Length: 115
Length: 116
View 1: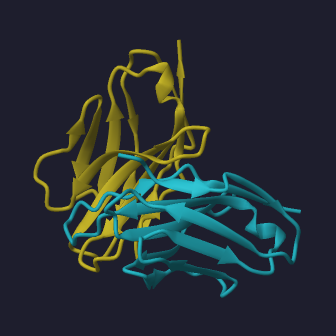
View 2: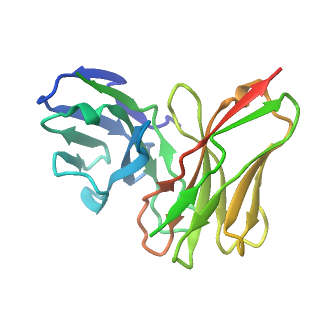
């Protein structure tokens, strides 16, 4: 079974631009979550999508948004990029069946550099 | 609110030795799950092991075992017979189960270096 895939793997943007990152979950997984990883703040939860609906959101400004499509694929968008948005963006998927052990499986991440 | 604390920024171990990575947590949730992930330099987070708050037995997965002490709110990862490929960052994470949400709260991680 194919794992979680993320595209692109690397991205360089300049301040003020916007960026869209894509995530394809493991087949059959219905939940997709996004995390931001930086040296200063560590791993922080951005948001979770389930059945095309955002059902949980972390403490990030409105410049960070996302969506999920009917095939569970997800995109996240960051508008008006700032230098502090430089990070590794990780996507994770899970079955979300409501059981206790809902393991999230992560993709390889997208490394975003904002200049 | 949930909080994960990993007090060891770095650990050093020789090949074939065992190593324990510490993790303590704080939560008001009665039902929660604890996870350990490995992150090599490539960046991908690799799931290692899971422990549920109501599990009476300590979890084991191959060379990985979890020393779960609920009263002390600790969930330490034990890696037996370390291998060179175990060199990586290790993260402890927690999820509240009752909400149904998938959000993981992570600790700051421990960098493990395995030497020959």
